[in-house]
Length: 249
Length: 296
Ligand SMILES: Cc1cc2nc3c(=O)[nH]c(=O)nc-3n(C[C@H](O)[C@H](O)[C@H](O)COP(=O)(O)OP(=O)(O)OC[C@H]3O[C@@H](n4cnc5c(N)ncnc54)[C@H](O)[C@@H]3O)c2cc1C
Ligand SMILES: Nc1ncnc2c1ncn2[C@@H]1O[C@H](COP(=O)(O)O)[C@@H](O)[C@H]1O
Image (tube, rainbow over all chains, first blue to last red):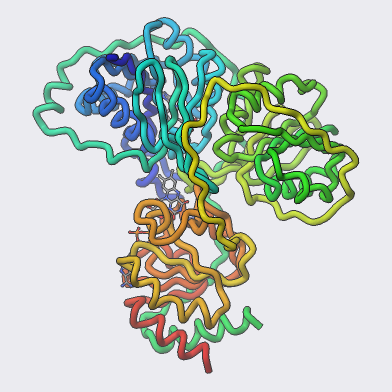
């Protein structure tokens, strides 16, 4: 059975490039490029692999801004067929994100699977899979490290602390993936160029929800470590041994 | 105040109950087999869910309880917990604060702390949220009053079916309670190299732990030994990081250590910003020397 797959992609600022101001502890966010969030890339790869195996179509939704074109082009280059950017994203508010995305998915209507990351790499919220499965009233297969279509049903393997499980549910369903599921592909140049010419649908979000929280502070964690670094190994070993003995006693 | 906790495991439940019980009355829901290990942490009434737990049937049971009568619903952020939290949040039409590692109450408000920007910052927020998910291992537990009432509830059917299950070997490790941790990163190069680290583990009576690539990607160590944002949060007296670069997601798991020692061949590795004592050099040369020095 060919599959209609919706993949959810978040665009974030490149968290690996963020430095914190040494004095104030404030993150310096100016001039840091945007990129696709880590788990969203795994989600795209998983969606495209499912399509390659079963046939079908991958539709990508980004709740982002008018700067989200670059992310969508990258998604196209990886094998996404159709892209929808909904603008109006203004910061981390999973409840609003879920409502906006659920509405778009209902408008698209015809789908078998929604694939997304289990916890996004910047905010680490992890709430969207549950929120969306509830709002769409479909089953949630969470934390997949492997996905297989099996007739009318989907089977996933998941790795938990105490056990590994294979679980299954009838489609349509929501599937969240973990980082271990795959190694996202690096698309060849030709594909990237072709992706640049593909049209992208863009529309503003219709729903608004007031931010559920007020940010009191957002600063680098304080570190009071001593930072005694030894390049003279023998001296270092002596000092470290003393420090360890002091604590063991 | 009235609190309801959902946690799949007794340990997280005990920690959350310890944190909450001085602020009000604590009720809790947990999975089958857990209550006997968490019936003396000041939880007033406890519900044990019998049967195979999935996000849909667990949230069904929670939603059939009078959730509006609680001031705060606290959910342990396990994979199941997060999924349940999302469903409950949607059904109650009530936004949740997520993945917090600490929280306090200021009159009428919930003040929460969580990592943001992938662990580079700590975000402190104030909200009216009625639902919060808490990173497992965030709170220590200590004994409190006995639970008066333990009730069993059979889980209803789920739309999800379990096809296969493979229990993992239960190991006796619990790095969260370790006094000394010797933690290895990708810098050890291969699984066999762990042998050469063991003398240091033995001489310090420590526990072995590792970074995410070591535990998850290469499986040189088992997953329950992973330290970090998506692993265990540890608070040993001494944390010895060997061949770990010190990415922020790793630091997020060992920030509670009293003394941090780092051995890394790269002078500019970020771990040297987050350690008390650092030695620059090849860990395979330094570790034997350190073992000798500790034997003296
Ligand atoms: C959402 C998310 C969650 C994550 N959660 C976690 C988590 O919970 N825990 C975690 O650890 N990571 C986590 N990560 C991954 C994290 O970003 C890093 O990739 C990881 O911590 C790096 O592991 P490492 O330090 O072992 O490897 P590397 O970064 O490759 O570092 C290896 C180090 O070893 C040193 N080295 C090499 N050879 C030697 C030698 N002979 N002697 C001495 N030093 C040597 C090198 O100089 C280098 O600094 C997460 C990432 C994401 C995106
Ligand atoms: N603004 C967004 N637009 C589209 N998808 C998103 C957005 N935010 C999160 N997601 C998806 O949801 C996953 C989990 O995010 P979260 O629940 O916020 O941790 C991410 O890995 C993405 O796949």
